[in-house]
Image (spheres, rainbow, N blue to C red):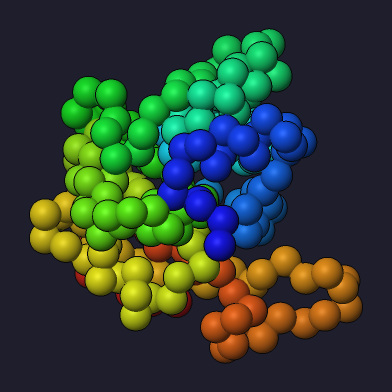
Length: 209
């Protein structure tokens, strides 16, 4: 099994293969949901950015303030160089379980596959608690943690629905991208969807969709 929870794995992967790669979903697959919860002028942190095109696509779609962090120094250096002409996109090597930002400094944090990668590492339960605590800390009073995951609600909500984080979780599903353009995804089949967990601070009751 790939060591998704280890920094060395990612450094080696990005050194060998610097081509852009999007886990689970491209921006187009989650664009409408992001627009539902995150405003164009919001201060956004993309946690575990990798070399995904997500931040570039957000920028091209009008989102104006996008900070990006990843545990891999290799990929951060690559992305810093690639996007040096786009100052609205910033890049820092950082661990999502130990964020170096002030309290309440972001309106939204986006983690696409980040939670799943942390769960692959040693001490995963404790690290997920650290990640959620840190994200909650850097989000402002009405901030949103937007998570894209393959994990089913029966599992992931155990980590996210915690009084310590003072947020309300809403669950959405998005169809997995299909290889065939004619394939019709069955959204009732857990294997054919990805899950989006929207954790909102200062919100009411979450409703699953």
